[in-house]
Length: 341
Image (cartoon, helix red, strand yellow):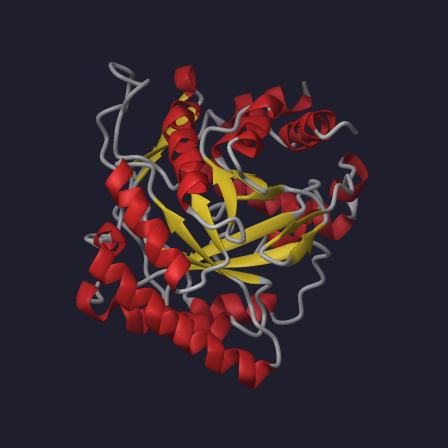
């Protein structure tokens, strides 16, 4: 009920301003200890990628692109927070306006374009963090790096974040960086993951620990593309697939204001596509490669649906915009009931 009032005020401003106000408010609440009093962390441990997560509900990347707010987000009860996407150099992203709400559908469209302060800023923010949950860091390429040289950007970011991340996600699926999704092709993905896997082995020797690697995929994949990606992911011993990113499709929002804006669609209409891709990857991947389910979670049953399709953990972002922090507890309660707790 309280968040309904807050949301009404936030929705009176443009989405990016509302986001900034919300995140700064959370950071202030964290510093004062208020957010920890309002939200109760529920301990429902789950093993994913060989790591013990305090609970299986996490924040999807994009909410905290630069590592400025993840400790405050942890106060809301999340078992893990994934920050980023971060690129080697700072970049402003695409021109504004670039985020659009579709309230009737509990959806959003964004074409942010990896706006972030660069990997060095993020590393300074996470170097001495005190977040008790699992911290994932999502890495990508700069917009002006030729796609043929994308691997260099991923390696640069991996080198920088490796000592500080519990896991690292290779983002090859944003629709808002030109040609990025071409990296999901068999030859391109094989070359990318081969090089990244080799660098991880070197970093593991250097740092004395092997940091899990996840690959984030698009929902706009046919069965053949899913088969190919699953084979390449298994060949290079990735630890998880995160399914999915936003969609370029517009099913479920036809005729709504802003529906024809360019960018990726997230929120409730994405769920059927994301669930289909999630289930297909579970069928194609070896059992030891975990899945994290993302896309369209707006209630507790949505999170359960992801687990029923093979996910070990779930993430959301747009659902938090529409439902607020109560969604965290609702998802955890539904998962506990599913598991007989």
